[in-house]
Length: 301
Ligand code: PMP
Image 1 (cartoon, rainbow, N blue to C red):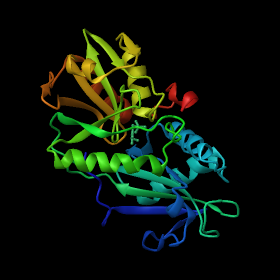
Image 2: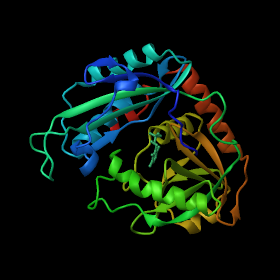
Image 3: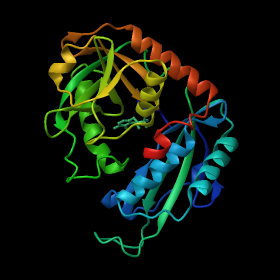
């Protein structure tokens, strides 16, 4: 999916305790978070002024921060309140919310001791025009793999984990694909550059267990919706060989929702498969009507 342009789109920024002028919301050039990737973030969407699955996102922000040794100086209620405050100030019908945590500029070096911790929350208008053409995605296979769990905190939403994703996406685009599939260090299917992946095999929904990649909140919501609709789901290790024999393939994420995959390299899939359509509709309905908070992701995120 294309990125969201920021120009003219930022309606509110909350930073370190208060709403601030978005034009003045800068960070110092020597920020430790910038140089050493001591930075975690979230991506949340709000519908009709209500952030979807807010507590799950706040929990994940906290666990991501803890995974890189940052204890947030705000409790979850204060962060959720700050997000609600920023969303209300922006007053957009649909918004993309980007909370970001980073270490400050008190120290230059590798040891973060002595650095302050910062939190900003930016609220951007979600575009009225779709970010892309809405057609089934074409996925390439990246030459990059997700790191092993001993090489990076793979389940945390750290900015460091996005470097390889950005490289993989640029290469996929240059190769004529919309996005890239990344494998894990064992050759198993992990995720795309910004979404989780599901396959339909003979009426069953299968997806890799989230051991080496981000356990998306949309992924967890879709698993819950599938169970609610009586669809058999299995979390099992999958390889590209499983992908090419799939009946349907789709990806999930906050930005894309539930999005059909039409091709993996040269292999075409049923672009408008029954289960994909059912789950996409159920998800769209859920985000429009519920906060999504009873999701099991609240406990495990
Ligand atoms: N994997 C990656 C690498 C992502 O960037 C995202 C988007 N946050 C996801 C998976 C899906 O996560 P979520 O459903 O929580 O948006």
